[in-house]
Length: 563
Image (cartoon, rainbow, N blue to C red; front, side, top):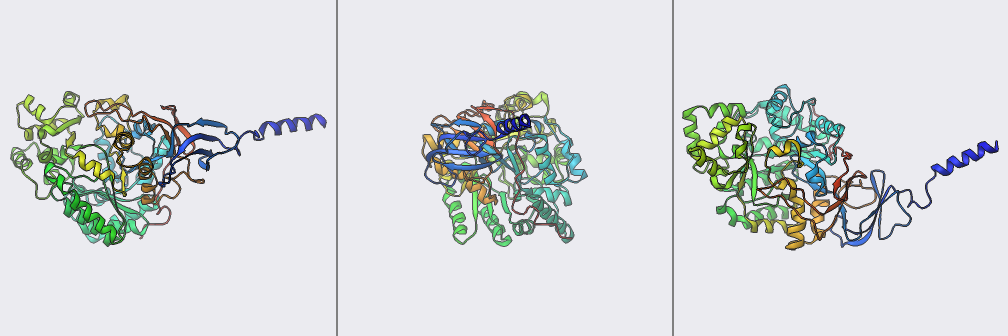
């Protein structure tokens, strides 16, 4: 009996918490400068993690954690939120999310107009058919199933999504320029409610592209009303960021007012030199709506160029019916002549980015056809000269030869306006890019540098070097501001009980290195990153851990579809 009791005592001693451990904490981050995410004054202190949650934040936490992280001289902040992520496919290819994790991004928010669900059988077929270097099956049907698919595969960052207005439109109407009848609109509204019940953050639109542009204001109000009833918001790439930007801001405000949902402008910008001086008019409209009690917010990326495809250089009518119909039309000489003429003139009902950037301001980023990849990193003007065809003819030829929209960077924006926008207190930030890696299939393209540097560029160039806003304000705009806008209550702040998403970085050295000419370069200065209490970045290197989860919106399990 004595031996048995002795053995039991020994076992109890072995499994009992070490009295030196601080309250049984798994991790204690020591001596960093705490930026709480809410804009409070920074102070030197400790952060303790137990399991997947923050257990305590204090100036001094006694004892020791199972893991101790020395953060002296470093900033300790909540993990950053990427309000406009296109990591939809890149995380399928590589769940580590390297380019964003190395900048402290712990939540990727997707859904700019197009979302990865809901899909019907025809949409599934086209989604597979149109894949480029990243190839994957599509076992899901709904948006919620897609997000769960990511989590099950293993991802480092957390993920969330809006449901795409264009996605529910395609589901019921296809890709043509048609209006829904009452029955079709009712089904579209039901799809939105179903997505909200699965945890979508709201409805996202992208109104410069077909078929999203074919939606009229009343259709968008109907969809956003469903999201608003479920606690969600509306977020939009507006119909115009150039010549018709004031009318487009007015439309977004009207949708917010009529639907009752808050609204955000995706990547606020003024495209084209002729429009740079309209900044004050745009901000006056936004702030007048805010003064009336509407919650209108904005986000942005921090570069003077955007990135999309040659879709934005051609009129919408030629793209009606989808990519295959567009390419087929571009083989018709009569249609080509009409398209070329419209590419040279301002479009009355479409955003002609070619006219604003000019062929010399359009740089190609990726091609499906390996024979065309020699053009990556070159301008349309340069390629047109080499081929001996006009810029318009060259653009159409490349779309046909590549059987794709042809990834293109457009130089459109003013650095001065970028600086002014950063100072807006309701401005958050989104990369408008995937979460990439400097290896594998990602090297087949030359992406916009925002994929590797958007957050680091903010914290290094614009906060530390140019002092446009304080570091605590920048952290607020990367964390609690977007979390609050999205209705996320347990992330975005360093607060006991919140999920342990943390970014630990050196404010003196954090910097972006990606350029338009050499984009595949990681940012530096981020030391440690935790997602749901698990360390995914240690001493600046990815640990390989994939603890990311689906983050669901306020309508989750509260908004069943009506029948």
